[in-house]
Length: 169
Image (cartoon, rainbow, N blue to C red):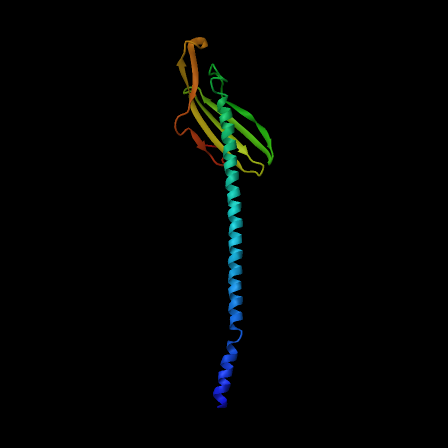
């Protein structure tokens, strides 16, 4: 009788503390899951911020392209004689830093197509370049001096987003 009772006590004694070990393992797994979810949310927040800055750079470059393109509009260039030019880089100070804007316009004398390339550099170094092109078209109007006016027509697909490539093909 000594043998089976002693064996029973050994078996029962070895079960003591197993609930503690299982609870510790469960706490460890839950901690690892919590850390993983926290890291994932930090990465997601950084990606969202990066996307917001990319969009900001795009709109900045698009605004510069529209400003340059406007120089060739009839209100600014009624005779349609403005030629190709590269504008000096300008700085636009805002609350989160200074934005560097640059651009150029090329006029094809044969087709009267105006192509504007504009770049915006954000304070963190990100750049975005866009290209816009359209043809100068002439129309007759008796109310205008000389009876002729011009406007810039934007054909479909005339916008090109060149990303960070300042040498927009």
